[in-house]
Image (cartoon, rainbow, N blue to C red; front, side, top):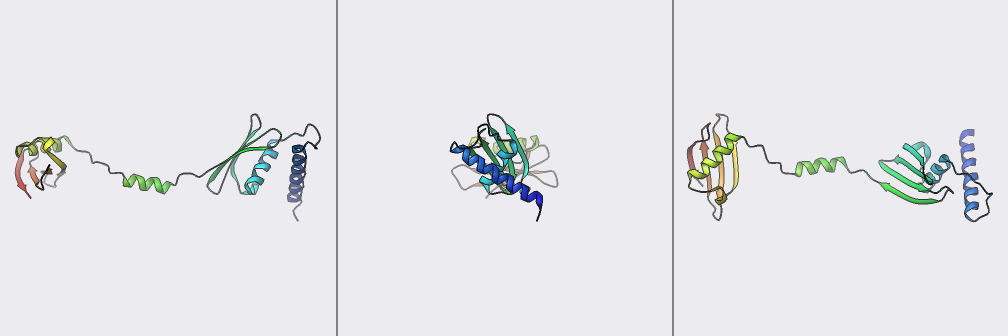
Length: 176
């Protein structure tokens, strides 16, 4: 048997006994709760072995603030100077995969070049409409540097496809 482990258990049991007695007013006066005692109280409350925690931090400020991580959760406890557990908070980190999925779900509009903007404006004017008369506008720069602009005329099923030259001037247009 490991003597260090036995001493830790004995120390823990002794502290908890003194703590319990102090709660009912039977403990000796001046029982001093240490940072280590505060940590033990919190670990007992959470049923977590000390050797399994990470990022342990105990701050003494009007009692103790005890923080540690265990199995991808962050625990925060508030313990009074007398060793009484006052609050407990367990936080689970946001799932990184969920964030990535949210980013993929977000529709990101592609950057439109000035040439594409010019081609869109010229294509709409070419059929005698204003930009407010159309919707679902898309543009694509082709391998031959021509620009294909597609849009729907609002209130109809009509789809206009226009091909513009490299300067944005319409060179062909068709309706579907």
